[in-house]
Image 1 (tube, helix red, strand yellow):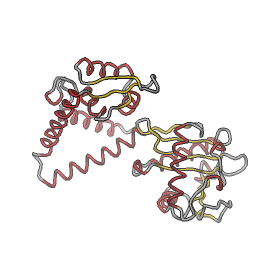
Image 2 (cartoon, helix red, strand yellow; image 1 turned 90 degrees about the horizontal axis):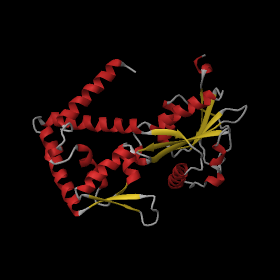
Image 3 (cartoon, rainbow, N blue to C red; image 1 turned 45 degrees about the vertical axis):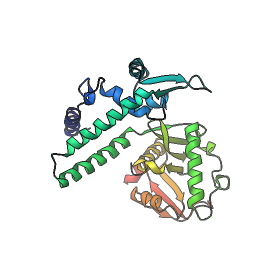
Image 4 (cartoon, rainbow, N blue to C red; image 1 turned 90 degrees about the vertical axis):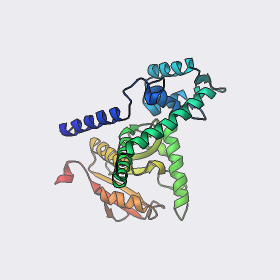
Length: 299
C-alpha cells in the first residue's frame, strides 16, 4: 500500500469529520452524538430489523445495543421481537422519534447548504461531482466477496436473479435446465467454486468456476445486480476466479456468453480474454472466450 495514499486518505478523513461536525457530542445542535442521529435516519419511517442495521452500519452488536438503549430511554425508539420469529428484533421510531428525525433532516439540509454556499456555481458542481465519485468508490470498497455453497440462500437469490434477467434479455428466453450447467451444485468444491458479493450484508453479485481435471477452468453464472453495476464488481469477480483457477493448477480460463450481453462481451475483452471457436455446444452462447493465466501467460 502506498504510504502517500494512506496519508492523503487520513487528511481527507480529518477534513471531513471536522467540517461536518461529527466530533461533537451534540451533532447538529441536538442532544445526541452522530451515531444516534444516524441510527434514527437508518431506522426510517417503516422500521428496520436490528440485524440489518448492524450490517448496513458496520457496527458490532454491543455498540448497536447501547445506541438503541439510549434512544429507547429518550422515548424515540421501540425494539420488539418479530411476530413470527422472536429471534428477529425490529426497531421502530415512536412519534417523538419521527419528529426528531424530521428536525435532523432539516438541519442536515442546512449543513449541506452551508458547505456549498461559499463556493461559486462551478466549484459547487465540482464538489458535488467529487462527492459522488468518492461515494461510488467507498461503496465499492465495502463490498465483500466470499466463497459459499451454491445452495446458500444468498447464492440462490443471485442465481434466481441471474436467470430472470437472462430470460428477459435473451431473444430465446433462458431456462437453466436447458443449459450445460443445469444445476449450480456442480460448482461445489472440489469440482468448482462459487462466489457471492455482498454489499451491507445483501447479495449483489455472483460468479462460478468449474475446475475439471485435465481441462481448462471455466467461468459460469456471473451476474451483478443492476443497482450495483458501475462499482467494478464484475472485474473483481473475474480477478478472484482467475486467481482461484491458478491456485488449482489451471493455465487456461474459458467462458461463453450471449450476443445480447454486449457489456459483458466488452468486459471480457478488456480483461484480456480473446474470442475463439466454439469449445462447447451451449445453446445460449454466441461468443466463446479464452485467456492464458498463471506463469505461462507471461511466456
